[in-house]
Structure formats: structure tokens, C-alpha cells
Length: 540
Image (cartoon, rainbow, N blue to C red; front, side, top):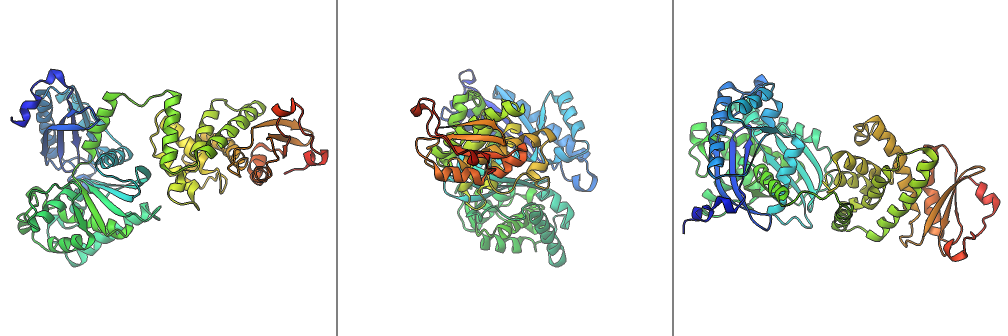
């Protein structure tokens, strides 16, 4: 039976269509969701319209390319309609995002084609590319750098397993660089050296110090798939899938050295290379080469999907049910995240409980917002996820992992606050020069300054990782605040840990803090073990 005959009952299935407007080409995918969250492709189309070909020199989309792109969009919308797609999402990336006449282009698409174009951010573009990679590759136990090379930009994602440690966007697009260097012709001697230097400067500026040494590079976008096709043609491996195709740095360097010296006419005849990509392939391969050098990676795998695939997958996820806002589901997602990072659930739950108890009492004394207790407790449970990367700087890694976690039940601003509070559970206090802290609003900076010292204090109260502290009571004493620690036995290590971490709390709330043990109130019928008066007066 012909494959397309399987899909002749559109009323029985939901069909989705996604259009990706890039700097080099416009692509359409029409897909049918499957019950397991994946999909089967019904149709794919591509038109190389070069929408961003004059962007670098003029700051605007090329008028002729705009007409070609609108014509392609008209055709793609008709194709999606022919398949009776129930949803159509159209996204635009770097070219439309940067161009001065990008909004005008979007207005024309709406007026002439009744097509709504979402101009997505570089961060969203990176996330979609990574989501596509996640679903195609087993990343467990691997540190990877994912590169999505487009016509106008390259997005880089550093990930440990399935968790994003950092995302970066660079203006290193294949079309943009080709326009700036060589115009698609041979690149030799000084011209090639200038191209390499420009790429290296961008990479060093944005990725100053890698969070870890990646085991491999995974690449998506037309440059990577072209690389795979050229390599397969040269090795007479026709018919192999390009997804997962392995290439060593040495193989890439050899191919790049050969292609960059070819006249454009000769390059168009290279087996496996699409003629309409011949003028931009050298710039694209040079970006790959310099990325591998920057991260000291000797091996890459090709991903034949990317942003468009990630878009379809997110559409399917939404159709199956969006992220739950139920607190129980949110809590379960946090636990899964902590476990994925090999975290100690018992310890962080204890710290979260104690932090919540302290905050509730501090909030009454200082008039703080009770709603922030939820953010503090989430930060406490997530504070140690950075162990996944390494111990010494785990608080900084926790910040990045939380920020990019996309945990259900939290808004982006809430995740940013949680990440910042977790960032300061150890190490230095929040400083205006810290980029993560500087980008917060003044109000949110104040919230972090109040929450972080409480988290730091609560962490000290489980220094032993034994969860022996049952409760804490905060009262005003004659010389400042007094924190009474309830535990069946004297928790010497935890008291020591809390006292060592009290300084930030004292400075923030402008008070001294005495931290003392008074046994277990419940077991002593409400009679606390008395503490010497001179000990209560002592400023810790």
C-alpha cells in the first residue's frame, strides 16, 4: 500500500503543520501525532529564499527575497490546508528578528496571507533545537555541546545529560559570514584567516570559560546535514541515514581545506552538496571547525532535524496536555529534576522544610510577602542540582541548570528568582557586579537578598545530613533574635553549621542571632531545656 494512503482519513486524526522562516530558507513540515508523543511526517517542503542575504550590509530584509518568501509561505499554507492541518504555527528566527523591516514583513504576511508569524527569541530558538536533540539522542551521562547553525546565527547549548547548563547565541550564520567573507568564492590565505579570527573572537567573547569539557558536539541545521551528505557520498555510503552520522574533527578539517580552495562553479558539482548551498558551505563548515577547536571536541554527530522538529514536538506536547499547575505535579517535577542530578532528596527536603519555617516567622517580624515562601522552598530543594557538573562551583551550576530547566508550574520570572536564591545558598553574597543578579529588577534583587540568607541558615541546620532537627522557633530576645532548635538529641554539628552561616542573615536583617538547642518540645510536654543566660546573650 502506498504510504500516503494511510493518511486518507483526516477526520480521524489531528494534523499539525509548522513553518520555519530562516535566513537561508523557508521550511514546512506537516505531521501526524502518534500516541507516544512522536509523529510521522506527511510532507516536507523547502524553499531557499535567502531572506537574510543583505541583512548584514543593510540591516534590512532584501525586497526580492521578501517576495520569494511570501510566495513560498502562500504555497506552504495551501499545502497545510490540503492536508487539513488542525494547527499551523509559523515561526521566524534571526533574519526577521534583527531586520529593521522585520515587523513590516510580518504585517504583510498577516494582511496578504492571513498568516500569523511568531518571531521567536534566540533563547527560544536554542530551546527548540535542544528539545529536538533530546528526543533523538540518548544524552544520559554525557556532557555535550549542541550547535544549531542557521543562515544568520548559530545557537550553542551546553548540556549535561538532558539538562541545559547554558545557552548562547552568536551572529555566526552561514549566509551572514559568506556575505562578509569571500562572497561564496575561494577562501585562501588572508581571507580565510580573517574569517577564522572573526569566528574565534565571537566564541571567546560569549563562551569565555566552558562549564565543562564536552564529550561530543551534536549539530543541527543545513550545514551539518550537508556535511553528512558530502561525507557519505565520498565514502560511497549512499542510503545511510544522516541522523547520528559521525564525523571526526580530522575529517572535517580535510574536507574544509579542500572545499574552501575550490571555485564556486567547481564546488557546485561536489557529490552530496546541494548546488544552492555551495556558496555558503565553507563559512558554515568553518564555524563547525572553530567550535570544535574552542571546546576541544574531536567528534561530532549530525542531527538531521532541529528547530522545526522541536516546534512540532512542543505542539504535540500541548495537544496532549500542557504543563500542570497542580502543586503536587510541580513537586513531583522538582523531585525528578533533583534525582536526575543525583541529588540527596532527604537532605534538600529537610532544608526546604526548615527554610519555610524560618521564613514564615521572619515574614511576620519584617513584613515580607508570605507568597515568597514557595519560591524559597523550591530553591532549597533545587540548591544542589549543580553537583551534576562539579562540587566546587555547584551553586553557580545550580543557577544555570534551574534557569534553563523549564520546570512545570513556574513562570520564567519565578525560575529566575529561584535560580538566584539557590545561587547564593553558599559562596559570596549577592553583588551588583554579578550578571545574574544585575539583570533582576530592584524589587526582585531585594527579594533575593531576603531569601538567600534564610536558605543559607537552613542549610547549616542540616549540616550533618541526618534530618534530626524537628522544628525551629524564632523569637525576639533582649539582645536580638533567638533561634531555638528543637531536636531529641543535641545536634552539635547542625548548630555549628548554622552558626557559621548566620553572618549573612544578621547583616541582612540588621540583628544579632543566637542559635540554641532546647531539646524536643513535644517529648518534654512543652518544657524547653533551659539554656544559660550568657549563651543567649552571645552574638553568634
